[in-house]
Length: 183
Image (cartoon, rainbow, N blue to C red; front, side, top):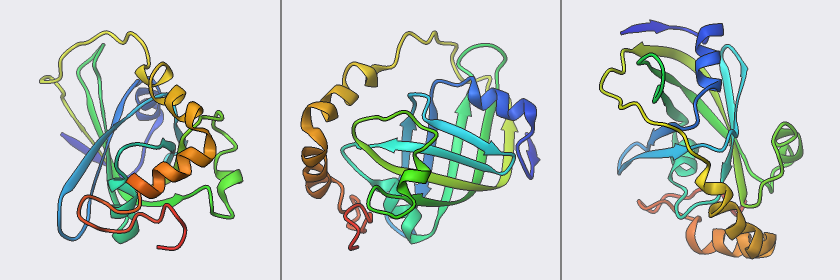
């Protein structure tokens, strides 16, 4: 295991080659959340800043935890090639579609139905470990392209916002997520 203050070129290349990453957050109390993310919606902005477009889902734990304390860890695992695990720690913020900065925040991303937030992580620690316990697996395709995105396209923006009000206003621990702009 080794630690670094920032990303370097090798780490950035590794991140950009991964099809999936994991986001971990926790509030002051309650449950710890770990969410898998993919679809090529993550951007390394520079050596101490990562951003990604987050899509709608059945929960909104990450947002609730970030609003409460900003703590976040991203984990990238090599499922092919050399065994590697890369963790990126830092403080996160988020931007919603109702925020003034939304259009600027999504400018570098494709238009995707169900887009819910842009998370911005300011990195304060990078850690590597061997990853020998991670299996080697072949990437086949993005499931979201055939399941998740068409689901939100069919709903339309009004339906997506109704879904947010039904499923995304509070975390499973009852914490506000900020999705409706009045939390």
